[in-house]
Image (tube, rainbow, N blue to C red; front, side, top):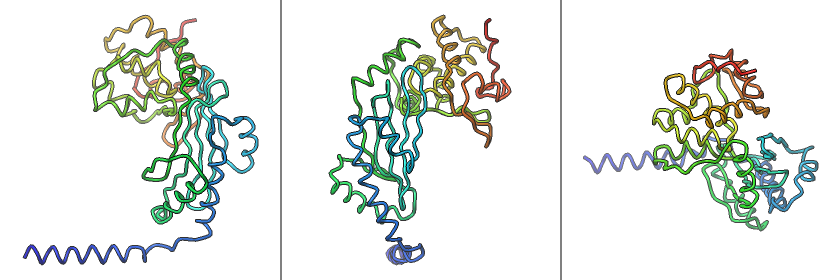
Length: 293
């Protein structure tokens, strides 16, 4: 009986596997050709750290999405993106004093057709003599860091906010902590939802990690860490004078952050975001202390 069931199950799986492609729309070859043509547009910009960033932005602006976000302390985050057929070409770069410190480049797609065309994209990437890429679920990516320039950016942040202390991060917090301190990330402030990554550090009572996030390189996460530390202080946890000073410095930064209340989103500085949230509605649910005159 077990053998018969297994045979029937195998037959059913096989029939579904062969029938599935027939249910979807056929791949549009003209779109695939656009994707293949687009591969060269990225490869031609590499190695990106050797390019004149201002010239690249000016040249691509008419046809590409070009957006640069101020991260403070001489840093900025540059997005270069262009959609082709089934996929998007992109370069995302961390800049310090206008020069590339770290970047990712590649192609990504969330279309159902991507599994059927991804090899052709990779073949074209190789034929165009692009650098070795990593295969991910939704595309291919090349990553590079200019170590000296990144270190200069880290030093600039440390001079303003204080150094990040060495800390042991347990495996269950490693992913959250890495994201919250990643210079290529910028967390969104929410007036309606708790940030789960920050909350995981609070739940683990790792104020040392929260203080490192506060002094880290993810602008939105710095503010979330400041809010979490203020909340802990209001529940009896004592903050050091240097941490309290750093919190004020982080909240007073003039850089604009992405903030949302339900479907309404805007780019505003930290203190303006809390006014926008009507103070106590920001997560964690706290009221900021009155700013000293």
